[in-house]
Structures are given as structure tokens and as C-alpha cells.
Amino acid sequence: MDCKIENNLKRCNCTYNPCSRKGNCCDCITYHIRSRELPACFFPKDAERTYDRSYEHFAILVSSGRI
Image 1 (spheres, one colour):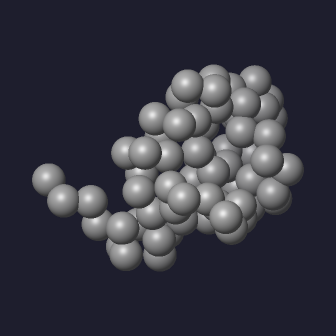
Image 2 (cartoon, helix red, strand yellow):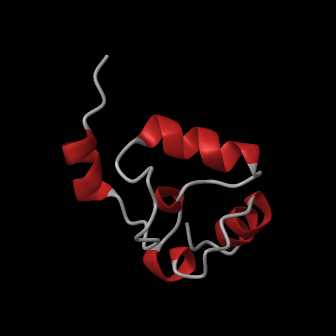
Image 3 (tube, rainbow, N blue to C red):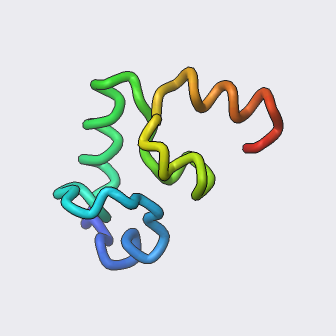
């Protein structure tokens, strides 16, 4: 299976511009899972900008109905 980086970039909401994994979802997910985090695409724009991509932050957003 080929990675469709160009298509992925159209939907990627990551604001960390020097990221070498942008558009490469497999690498992005692997990187974040190792750090007990979720990728930016799991978060709404305002929450993504905090760079807090922890499972705990995601759970708070879900329990508050923001996701």
C-alpha cells in the first residue's frame, strides 16, 4: 500500500510546522503512541494548538462533549 501523503496533507491539522511526519500518518501515529499521545487530527483546532496531545487531554475533551 502506498502512502497518500498529498491527500493526507489536505486533512492534516497539525500546526507544528517543522514536523517531518506531516502527511505520513503511519509514522505520525507510531511516534505519538510511543509518547502516550494521539496525533493532532484527533483534536479540534483550538485544542490542537495547545500541543497537549495526551490521552488524558483527549479524555477531558470527550467527557466535556467537545469531541
